[in-house]
Length: 187
Image (cartoon, rainbow, N blue to C red; front, top):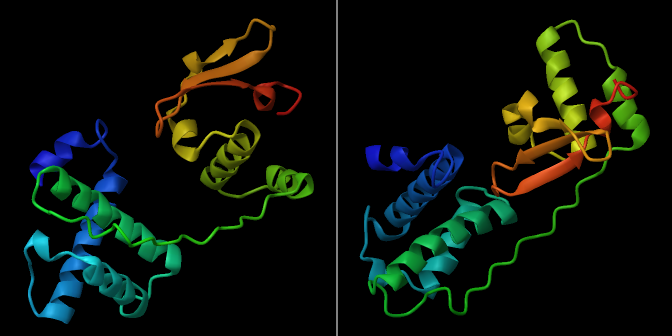
């Protein structure tokens, strides 16, 4: 466990580690329920194992489709490591094609965003959360990127306007965002 913690913030995020630990817990619980064992040889992971594990996630764990598929995909990454190391001769995912359902998220209207922006809160902390949310809406930055934003990343662009020059945390890609939301007109 200690070795895993060394990679947090470098190779992967704490949430990634938690997701894999949760997946491991589900696999162990599944094996205990279905096979009455706490561990099996990786060579016994086959197509039937995956189908049964998916059924377990949906029925016993009451996971929705997309959550079940995410756990199956997490297990799939481990299986690919096993294949790469020669611990598995046949890829159990070969004919296993899980399908995630499309998620349709409603978009805020300008009026809804304006109401949120104008909403007054008695607690300063909640007002700060609102401001960060509205700022994210205007810039397209994720919450984690807004949290790590530094004043030095707000620069005057070649057009004379304020821009955000930052690196996105999840993808480590550079973003150049005209900061209309930062200008005094929008505050």
